[in-house]
Length: 504
Image (cartoon, rainbow, N blue to C red):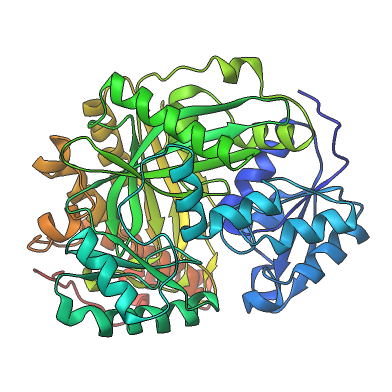
């Protein structure tokens, strides 16, 4: 479907999300400009776009976080819109302000809405006024220890200290005793200052064993604000999601309607336009509390797309062009079940530490109801400068049971050799009886996976790794007369051994 509202869109991101945005633009017949750092000159997103421009060295502050350079590049290449994806500048209100000043459309919310919802304290006050349930805690930032002690006493221990200006677990501390409050506040302030340049922290009641439930929302400039149902995001490590699914096993139709209506109230109260995600904590008694609103496209948006048949990125572009939400989207329903596994470059057997190196061999699973959003290929180099997410594996099936089975098999068929990923760890999560029973809480990994036994690397994976490494090593050609004496891949690879994985 041709869509000529924009002449060209600059994609201000990298990796799998940049490729995802480029594909949506292709559907709308809109040319794209990829930007890249010198480390990414041969990346998949650069090859996928219609054109590309280098914007700086590998350090994010000199490239993907350089607002002035990105705006300058957009103008030089006649781009009239910019899509930020997620991460980097996606939630920085200075970016849409700079776009507006340059006469470029920012594909996302206004700077005002972003600024309001990006401040956890201000947004809590705003949502409480709008009748949205919030977690008991401080209404203002703490200026001294006495304020924290008073708020903690009123909320009741355990309490959670959080950074007002950020997320992702940075500046976050759980405190179970009054004696630990001062050191926890001071530690959270230091971490918040380092991560966000702002040491403002606040306190709220810590909800024990909650579920993390979020609702996808869309708002346009024609008075339409809707939700596209929920996503269950409780499988997390270090406050970062790794497996998401929809629908949630915890929500009844009545609770879903109640939470969805609250999500729409959040977006409406903020005057929100474009796509966003309202996050809630759901306690064991069915009570839910506003956590925050992410003012951008969410990493896990594909599972909503799979169960509603809505292309959220296409809708983002249409809304930014001044159009109303599509009629089919306004009438969207939820069907079947979808699961997403995030494929990070990390070592699940070593506290999920980042893994870097060359992708020696890459092969994606395929089949009905299987989708891979990827930013890598064989030969890609995974460095240490950026977020370790490589790809997202998404499956769809008529039921949750079938979706779990399909995901397990798809993960087994997913071949990424050369670096470590948490693929086998996620297979074990999906196979766990508590996951299959739908008892997924934010402490799932700590509670259920700490004593996990890890078996040997399958022989087929070992053989593939050895063969791939041998091929990439490219030994000198053997004269044809001696071809029958050529070394096998097992000999050319050099010293190697079969090792047991760690048993925890």
